[in-house]
Amino acid sequence: MQWWCFAQQEPWTWTWRPLLGVWVGMVLLVLAYRRLVLRSFADPESLEITRWRRVAFGLGVFLLWASLDWPLGPLGAGYLASVHMSQFLAVGVAAPALLLLSVPPKAFDGLLTRPRTLSTLEEVTRPLTAFFIFNIVMTVTHWPGVVDSLMPTQVGSFTLDLAWFAGGLIFWWPVIAPVPHRPAFHPLGKIGYLALNAFLIRPPFAMMIFSEHPIYSIYELAPPPGGDALSDQQFAGAIMKIGTAWIFFVGVVVVFKRWVHSESAAEVSCR
Image (cartoon, rainbow, N blue to C red; front, side, top):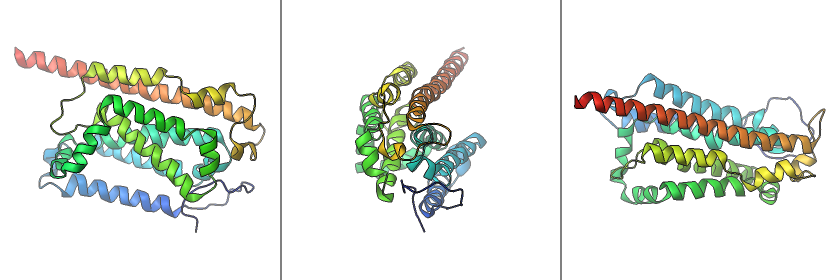
């Protein structure tokens, strides 16, 4: 049985092919969340495990599963660049944010018992560092030579997906999740951080939009029905730019609303 999606260079069929690695990964993610949030503390209710956090976790897991399993997984791996880019938005941008939102802040105090992990986390999640890591990952994993080299194998495709997910977690951490004993990122800084990433023009986007020829061999060999590989590639570029901008814009709105609410609450408490 195939365990991960990859570019098989075969005619597309609608025969259901579940991907074992995706299902196992989702089960492990659920078990890890349960252990982190419910079993590591005597009183789960004290961790503010609210309904919206559980909903965020469910949505995050669903996005990962739907994007990586059949049919979107195989379609994005070797047939449609536009689906591949939609997978990136889900796996590398939206799902990491939802999963971090699902974890109560006090649960991160467990990092205090792991000084080496905490030290590494402090370094990679500094806003400037996280900014560069995310954008480097985003650029490298969409570079034509990298995509064409890794996507034809299950291990290579898995590596790309894992890089997306890890890069997304690092990117969102300064905005959403705390690091014990480190001052929180100021809301104005969070807004600027997200806004800059929303408007930033990255090399893969320009290549996909303005290239006169398909830049990915794996998609050129499997053009979409009723269209051509170049049109699908340009659509993928639009998804990259517009999709990330909208997600980051939602993040800006949420940060701003929380900031206003906290300031209002502080004024009331001072009276």
